[in-house]
Image 1 (cartoon, rainbow, N blue to C red):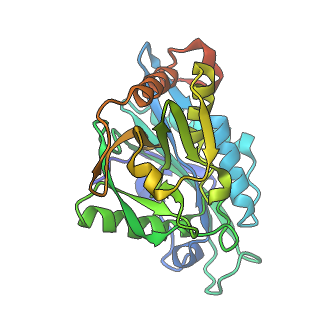
Image 2: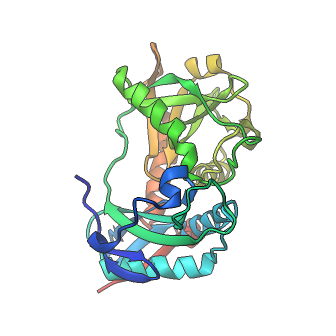
Image 3: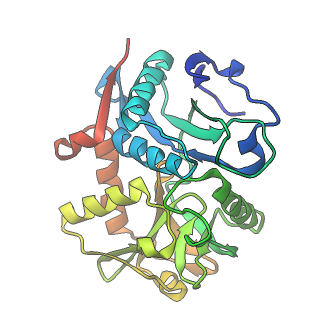
Length: 304
């Protein structure tokens, strides 16, 4: 059972998590008319009276943009303050994950976005490692990633994640840790809730935005870090066969952070991952506020 933080934000107020409940007739429950975000927080290793949140402003901006697809205006600055208040009320002692969600809260049964009430809630849970840091095994999913012409993939829309759920279960039930989705053109796209990178001949490579990927915040962070470290990088189309002969490959996301890939289908990837390890160490140092170059990526929230 998940270890949820005790206080949630629901119906425009902070309430005990157990009291934050919705109707079984809620529109979003039936049609996936919701958009969500997710960000991690930790106690500052050097200051126990401070919580660190990674790239809070970017997460709030993305959820605000996602909400527009639902015809809902969510002020990113207001959301930022709500999340700060949420952290200060909960004062978590362990690494945690925050889930803000915008949804159609009306009780109508017609699939629509107009003339239906929208609401927002916020809750959190304790979260350690989402995927093994030692490396994960992956398979190519039989399910295909949606196309932007039929689904607003620039938003983090909840309805899209049925594909992720199908792919994840298929992978796990067939003996793998994670699934890699191909797009409608048969090119490498992303995992079930993570972006993907590979390394070939010293160059860091990841699918470009025109490959129907989510605009990942951790993905963006890794590209910036790579530039600053002088690691060559490319955003482009990746063929399925190219992943199988990569020198290194890893998944990344808010929950997963950086998770090396050790095997794809029956192809083992090299156990030495110098670029992956360099990026991972740098990202950890940044999230723990140990790198002055990226201090503007880390919100420091005082607690008692």
